[in-house]
Length: 117
Length: 140
Image (cartoon, rainbow over all chains, first blue to last red; front, side, top):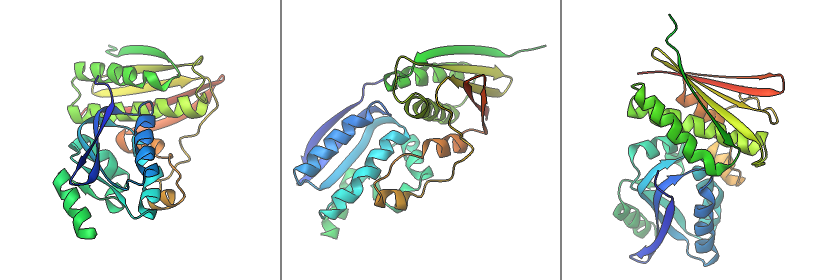
């Protein structure tokens, strides 16, 4: 099992969180902290890159549900990118693609932010 | 002739043990020829079930224990989760209304939906102060 971790960087002025390992009810609080930090610093254009995430349980999806309204209220969004099929399936089963922007690649998320603004 | 093979694992009711349970389940499912896709479904269903027990039945009291039992019988895997906490009826579920939940900043309620979606059959019973959740999956 790979340990869960989050790395924060910026790309073209957008906040990017890279997720690694397995996101479950135990590790979801780390993601929650990262998102809370960004929001409290008024950083609201957020991309979460799932490239290195191997696994997600509903507790992980719950974090995105809990913060998306806060972010959108201050004019931003949380866009999701680079999910493997297994991870995407969980989002899909629960109906996320109709309410969240989910992209194959981080660059597409950036383009969407730019075209929305 | 009875060819049932069973494995059992007891864990303390802490979310820190979820990764161990996933490993336990995937190792044996792989040994018994389940596909990568099936294993992913089974792992997630068991994870969601254990998370519900830890959260709702035991309210994060990690002095409590839960048991995961795997029964391989031919092409079928039966998973039995047992706890002694507060009962939780998995029959009373519906697909979560994501839009409404987001508006109300309400999370949760997704675990049971996933379990029922990913497994062929999910049943729940209470007997002698024990909650027994039984899930089955046919090898594809």
